[in-house]
Length: 234
Image 1 (tube, rainbow, N blue to C red):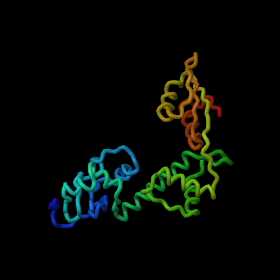
Image 2: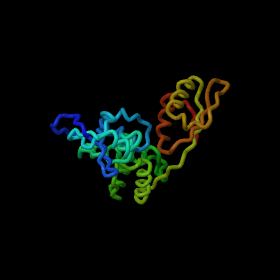
Image 3: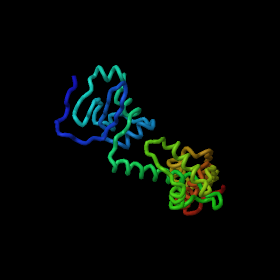
Image 4: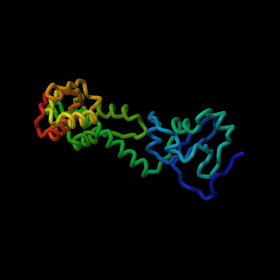
């Protein structure tokens, strides 16, 4: 027997819906961004983005699915299965916002991780946007980010040259700036640090292997922290 859990007045929800075994199963979503991140494989607790783990046959009408039916068709962790395998039913405004967010994230990734091989500098954001417009890129917020980004990179390379080669930077920092500058580099670029050697005079030598698009940021950071006294070689 189905139970009504809400008033008869219809309320609009953001839902995850899965049709399986001839049945309809729904879960009410409270945070769409986290639900999409969960679908893409990020480790997020389900309680962070659902109103509850109650499974409905029709959430707008307040019709709850029977526990026996949910168990027999979906097994354990039914809410997670509905969100991962089902469809998210979003409003037009939600879809527009998610598409804009995904498009911006892709542009930022390309700008931060690539350079124009002719100038060895990152492409301006507007140039990347225009290239995407020229090849008529279609952004799908539900597609895996890495997969979609690689498809777009392949498409816009017909318009603009892109290099994702790594750059090795060799940095010698004077003793009076060593502590603070090393901490800043470690905090922001720890995964890029390939070598670090403290010198007898208290200075430090660091080697970084970075994506080309980050090079200007590192030059700016180090020169700011050392008043331009650090030695930087590529």
